[in-house]
Length: 513
Image (cartoon, rainbow, N blue to C red; front, side, top):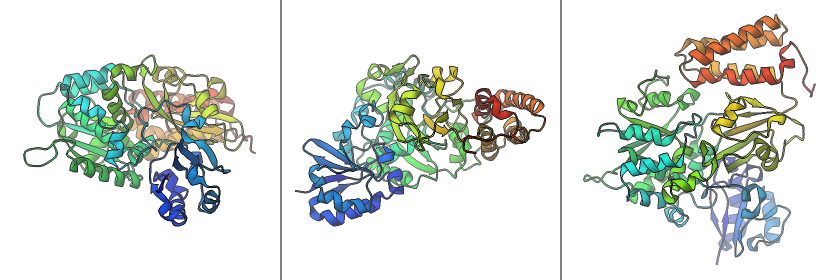
């Protein structure tokens, strides 16, 4: 009887040779092994992670290279034998064991494109519960759970759905925003590649709740594996009739994948909708909001992948079961993504309330280089910086805001003491300059002027005067930009200036120099 060996097909694992490892194990193991390509467990520092199914559970080995395969077989790893790359039972690895996995419960566990495997691990339970409920009951359940948008805005999902449900019957749309462009983030991609049916189930439940018959998943073009997996998963789902059938034989809820062209601004919901319509991705003035007048001028819900991926758990287990996780108005869990100069980079799903110190030091293990941490940027390229003496902050929407940062999409990027903070502040302005849709002047022109001001400060040119002008410019961008692109760009600039004022006094050297 062959032994099941799990080797991820996740893009992160593929980038470090997972396919080569799979071929080497298949070649040496022959009929003794059954290779299953699963998603990543999220311990990216151990990829390619090879798991072997034993009587005790799955035994983990990693990071494995093709050159390690011969020694693994010699150590009888198919029976869980000891090896220098062995980590024991996967579930017992502290990095993994200390998480609360709700949204990512199946990622890395199942074959992503096996519906039977999905159902055997709790999939479809949420949909089955939703089918016994009215639309109002579905929406109220999501509202009572306290689920908020995981894309960064943190708006209550139930209120958004309630607004769309209240619109007159007729054409409505549900869109999943997978234009994951924040630096250091990869949770959307991991869920789509590791558990695509979870997203689909969440979207079908959402469609039942608001009365939509058409859905779009907008995926950035840089995610070819996610695009391919989602398209295959949609075909499998529809062929099984899990969205129901119309009289003409078409799915009652029809899903489409749309591929973005690399514009960061299309992560903003109105820009994304413009792109789906075939137009240039530009921000639209609100009101009206998309829930009232969105895609093709019809009521439209736009939710992040992680938001929709949380819905099946909520419907299957009840609103209170989800709300019992977290703190204050930050309910449930958040998949945090550890990147930058971090020893143990990867994905950590924890209930809100976990501290930044726990994430960076306990899970992340400090810096990969061994150098001191200088600052952490939370919330993506437009998020604020937090220094080590502020690492006791609890991770939540309100608590991070009070600390001058933001949750964003859950990205955490670690920088060591060689980082020049004027360079990072300038990068924020450059990023906005490159990615602005160009519609509003504060964002389009402000980012260019901000970059120029920081360059003058770096050169020691009229430093005090230019800092005053930079502060005024930040005020203007925050208050007058049409969307968060320009409105949030000042956050990393201002936190860098506040926390490292000595670096904004002219030419200086970093610790490495």
